Image 1 (cartoon, one colour):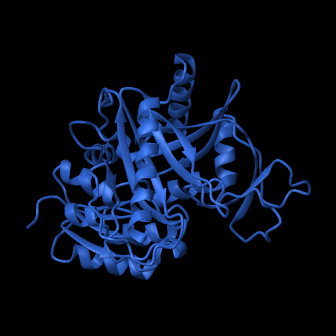
Image 2 (cartoon, rainbow, N blue to C red):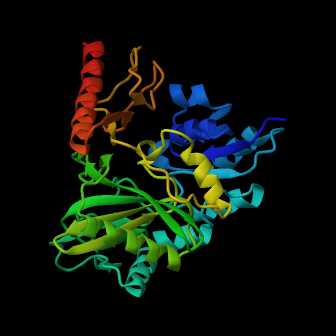
Image 3 (cartoon, rainbow, N blue to C red):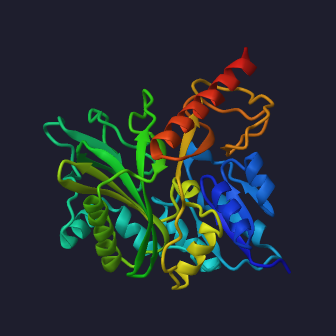
Length: 371
């Protein structure tokens, strides 16, 4: 019998799987890509053919997890990105295996715009005004989708006919900061704060681009963000790894979103020793580290998107700072992720500058191979 087999299902399971290996677990991964480096760390994989555009399909996910779990007796399942608007599917998963993460009811609560607005109001936290109907004056409003993630679903174009899952949020301008939070049912540790940026495209002007930690904030503002996190944790029984996104505008801290699962900044908060995945499992079991693990220096990560359709990914000698590497021969559509790049630096500015240069280098390598 394998030691500590664990199921991982996410849009991309590579970061979770790599950290699980470091933490002594045997990762069994179902995701949309099964990239080269996911294959390298996972004990077994299943590719979900539905893909990013369609999202998680219940029958496909359950079939993949059942295939991975067969004869292995996994300790449970960790759901990463891709389930924010699929709480019914999380319920189905939890009926079959222990859920190592937030309960479906918690996910549904924090991803519901009305519930989140009420939570912020009750906790005395600023949150942009929302509307479930299209505002008569569209100026200063954004259109969003319930359960959306990664900024792909956000648009300033309110002329599009709203769907059943559409809501509208008053636009707030400011500096984007995210808190990586380890929670254990009304208790929390802030693992760190990251500054984030977008990688806009014509169709997705608010698409997630990358993040760098530490976020360079004053001690007072840092203390305010920590206090808000603890207020949220006291009000909502979050468990495991979560992220809370803020906008900092003048003297106001706006809470934009709670992501009740391991987030896009997972890589930059992985401790030099130990495993963020193991911390997630322990937190879900009621154990929080004291104090939270710290990293020295700065770290940045960025998603590199295809500038145009790539009918056939070329054979590349991938640098060790690039992850989520697609297999040679894979087709990647314009604006879909090509890979993730990482950079370390003595300062946040140095790490962000280096990660931007490495992102450009990946795009140049693809252009040269295509020439």
